[in-house]
Length: 221
Image (cartoon, rainbow, N blue to C red; front, side, top):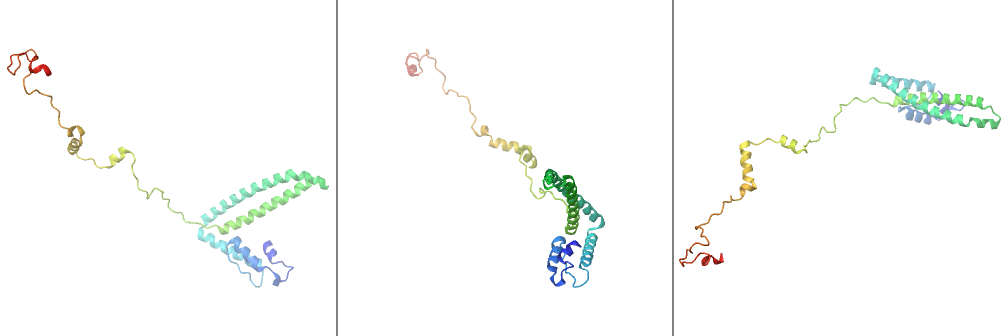
């Protein structure tokens, strides 16, 4: 009613009313298009339209969900506005003593302004609550899906990777290891054996000279 009176004052000719301003205010505040009737009580028509719109929203959301939204919104707005009101009261308390310089009783001024601040808080709570109730929309719950649902899983630990692969046959594995073993790839070493019989240094030289081996052919060995 007060808002309608602000845009459509009674002491002003209807031709000078700010009808467009009222319609824009309703659209921005409640998200609902409103066309002012050409005649009749505009405030009553606006109230009926908002009531029908809210009843339709409640029916679409369901009674239980709608009441839950109302409680949550009211508590949130009440908590926020009460904190702002306490901050405003602290500011008023800090500067109320200056009223004495204007020949005014600080206590009377404090009581008067505190009442005005409280009344403004109540008005803001009502206005914001109604605005939120009209603009809120219920969304159907969706099944939560993990962000890793579509990500392929890979194993980084060597034991896990080995466990994920099929194990080969034991006999085949043994043969494969033998085939690639560096020791098995080298030829087997055999001890050195002398082709001829060893001749002692004091024995006769096998060349037939009649001398000892160390004096003959064995001199350079």
